[in-house]
Length: 110
Image (tube, rainbow, N blue to C red; front, side, top):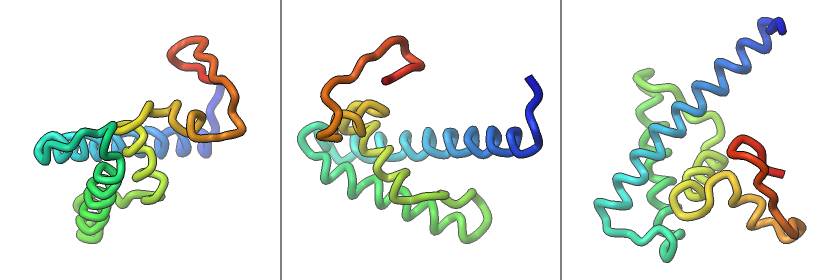
């Protein structure tokens, strides 16, 4: 398999985004623990914490020290799903059109 320049670039961007989300996730979890928030009972508080963490990160990105968040609202939603919900399954669980979710292996959800 040969990757084109665009394919390599897309793969690099995806990896950078994943790393950024992992870093932000760690900051959100630390703040949740520090503030004694129950993530399942207080998803709204987790959302406010995630919004604050992403906003702080974006403010630091103005100095060039860190990369900016590409889609802040999507990242906040992903962080809330990771901390208060069921991670990548959460959008399917929230979608009223989805009647069932089959997990065939850890890398495949359909």
